[in-house]
Length: 93
Image (cartoon, rainbow, N blue to C red; front, side, top):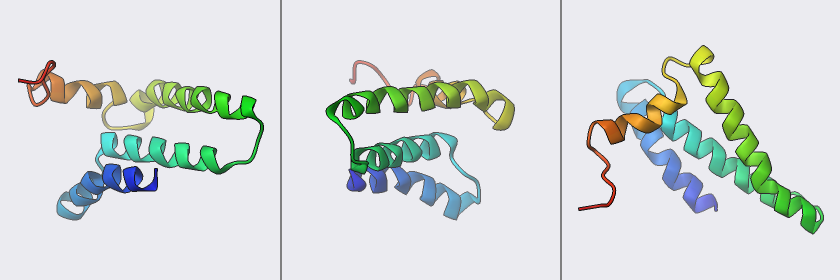
């Protein structure tokens, strides 16, 4: 899990080093990965382990709802922009 956190943080760190700005999508993915790591190391019952995903989903929902007021670009915009520009295609060619 820590390796995936490093992989998700790499584009954001590169963008920050090059342009001195934080990439919102990369920050979101890194935060969610680190959140999953933090929740997975907490001791608890099997019920808590099942509720872990619900906790992270709730954080994602709050992030989506708050982002239009506190960020330069809402999180939904950051997710949809690569699709609208044609950088990501489904299904892949």
